[in-house]
Every structure is written in C-alpha cells, then in structure tokens.
Length: 393
Image 1 (spheres, rainbow, N blue to C red):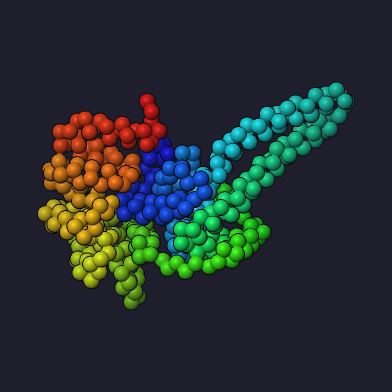
Image 2: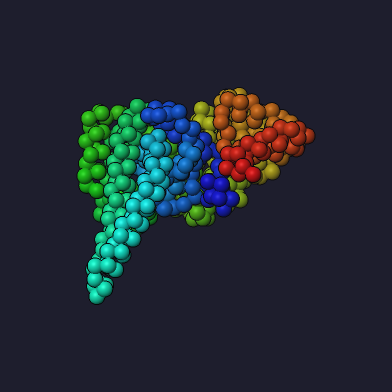
C-alpha cells in the first residue's frame, strides 16, 4: 500500500475517496467477522480489476468503477473482496503455499532420487516424474484459488444483500465481463478474469444464490453517477475528458446534471477553472441539496485564485452539511491558502474526531497544525500517517 501511494497510483481525491469508503463501510458493517478494520481506495488504472491486501486494504481500479452498469454491480465486487479479508483467504493462502511448497519440494526430490536409482538409462522417466509433480502443485493452487473465489462469492452476496444492495449485482457484473463481445473494453477485463477465474458454474451459482435470497430494489445513488463522471475527468488525460463532453454538447447531449458536473470537473482538471464556475454556480442554485456541487465550486474558485468566494461557498456548505468529509477538506485547503491555518486545523480536528481520516487527510491536518505552530499535534498526526502506511521505522 505504501509503495502504491509513493508511486502515485492511488487516487487522492476527497470526493471519490469518501464515496468509495461509504460503500465499503456499508458492506463491512454487515460482513461476517466484521471486527476487521477496512480501508477502501481507488487506484488510477483503466484496467478492470479489484483486489484485497493484508491489513484490510481493498483496492478498486478506476476502470472497474467505469465498467459497472449500476451501483449494485460495484457493491458486488467490493463485497467479494471484503469476503476475501473476513474469510482470511490471504493468510490461509500464504500458509497453504508454504505447506504446498514443502510437499512439492519433497515430492520432486523423491522423483529425482527414484529416477536416479531406478534406471540410469531412463532420463525420460525422471523428467516425466518431475513434470507430474510440478503439474500436481499447480493444480492444487488452482483448486485452492477456485475454492476461495466461490466462498467469497457466497459470503459476499449475503453481505451485499444485508447492506441493502440487489444480490444479483455480483452475477450480472461477472456475466458482463465473461460474455463474448467485440467491445474493446473487454480487453481491459482480462486482468480481472485472470485474478478472478470465472466459469459458467460460478456465474450460475451466484445467480441462483441471489434468487434464493430474493431481489432487493436498490436505485443508484446520485453520488454513484456523479463519481463515475468525476473519475472520467480525473483519471487519464483530462483533455480527452473535456473533448468527450464537448462532443456530447455538440450532438445535443451533455445536459444531464451528471454530465454538466463532469464537464466542470474536466475544466478544473485542465486548469481552466473560470469555465467551470458558471456551470457549477448554476448547479448549486438548481440543486441546493447536492453537496458535491458546493465542493466542486469551492475547488474551482480556489483554483482560480478567488479565495474569498471559495471560503464563502464552502462555509455555507459546511453549515448545510455538517462534518461532510469532502466539504470540510476543501474548506481546510482554502483556509490554508488564505493563511488561516489555525481554523483549518480546528475544523479538521473536529471532523477526524468523528470520522476516520485517510492517510492523505492525516498528512493534511499535520501540515495545518505545523503551519499553525502546533508542533506537537503536527508530529502526532505525521506519526499516525506513517503508521497508516506501514512505515514503522
């Protein structure tokens, strides 16, 4: 995890991070063996994949989020990865590999010894025995992986249903990836299919289990559709995203609130925040209960050097949405640019006494504390930042 952060693979965006953490927490709070601490994050990678790591770290590639058709499918993949952690598949896999390695080595030595003593003129027999031993070891690993995948499906489907998502979402996403299609995006799904080997039996079992539990009506949240558009602009080439929205508008589209938001995010990403401000101002007036629009407008004002306007809209948003993580982080960033580091530290302290911060947010409050002259708090938060990244030294 630490190396991924250092190489810039993790998307450090308050809005996307908060959304994916909210979905993850809704699942982990209903998971079996739910005492684990989880941290869900997005990786800047167009390849369709997701994976769990030791310590409860669960990564979701940006390409996977964009490949999902609805929020149920995203929750299905995240529930599957959560189950890998709760069922201790990573630990059990390491133990199994070490045992299998010892057995495989002993078997290979036995095969070599047998070939050497049974017949000096029969090298083919020795080679055949070695190949058979290696084949058996590989098959054992395949079987173990398949067993884990089936178990993660079974546990994950139950978890997502308990959290209020349609349990069929997992099966439909698997089926979409596995279906033969000329769609070029399928090429990006190869990595997911390698890491999560699918079969007709597995897809059918996931579908049958979902039907047994019963369908649950779960409509996509607005946050899901907005974050998909945000990712389109933040991951990859922002110029390409801006061209995409320009093409939509040229062809009579681009009028949905999600697309208008995505275009504004793209304008900010290509360092043209002045173009985003009128669009986001209109969205705030039309949809005054959508917190993402306030955060983006505050971000646009800050990027455009309008600190007073940024602080004004974000102060209003904090009053409307108390302890909203992205809004509070955006306000703290604006306050720090304006030199009001003490207030930035205070609002972040108030927030993170209630909400678990991400590593990047922990570093932000350490920076605010240091700038405010609170050296002790600065050291405390930086030590916590290093701990979160596994940098014990």
